[in-house]
Amino acid sequence: MLATRAVNLFYDSCLALLYPQACAICGDSVESRALGVVCEKCWQATQIFTGDETVCWKCGALSLGSVAPEQRDEVRCRRCDADAFTVARACGTYEGALRASVLLLKREPHVCRMLVDLLAKIQGQHPLNQATRIIPVPLHLEREQARGFNQAGIIGRALSEAVSLPIDEISLKRTEHTARHRAGMDARDRRESVENAFTVSYPALIAGERILLIDDVFTSGATVSACAKVLLEAGAADVVVLTIARPLLC
Ligand SMILES: [Zn+2]
Ligand SMILES: [Zn+2]
Image (cartoon, rainbow, N blue to C red; front, side, top):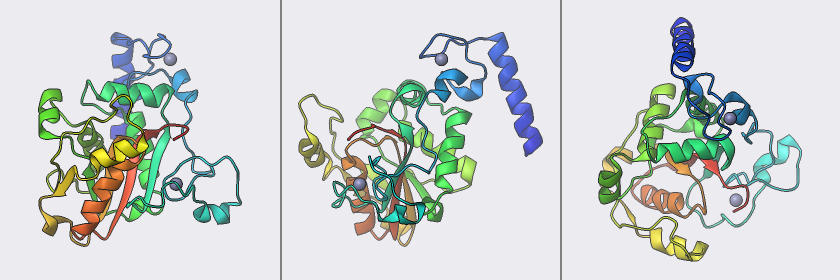
């Protein structure tokens, strides 16, 4: 396994030398394909969560204050009280390398090794490590056909392979076509627009399962909360959320 990894890293570096790619942020050449479309320096300049930050234990929002490590699971922002998921976590803030990776995923169905490793590391933390099944937030069929793929599904499959968790892309369906970021929509409008957008097609498949719900970005939490609600109503034991990034303030 380690040997294969070393060969892959070597192969990636050779490819990067033969076919240099310009960093999507600064334009310097990207040192390895494992880094995706961003160079090492720009990855280092991006805020990646280490797990030592003080965040709302439930939704993962960064808190301005700080508390002792043993009190971290008591921190709540209170804005997420009504959300149906148990916890939501992200690899870091929606900026720099994470933003560039999310934007690339809307055009190309590929998740770089760097990002898979970050996602796997967070999935290994409690309580995300209790998950028994990965479910990506679905796109409406029309939108998925227009794009050719569901970016959350691509993230989910890459993580599924990395952490050996089964992925289920058929149980949760998006039945309503909702505009994700329509101009002029405030948080309440967004919440109302996705509230009834999801349904569970195969409750038997998710009964008693601890679901790891995957999306590219956590914004208001409305989308993942709406998914969590129908999954729990259909018999899931728990729903935890993992995304690539979340805005610094939301
Ligand atoms: Zn760069
Ligand atoms: Zn919160």
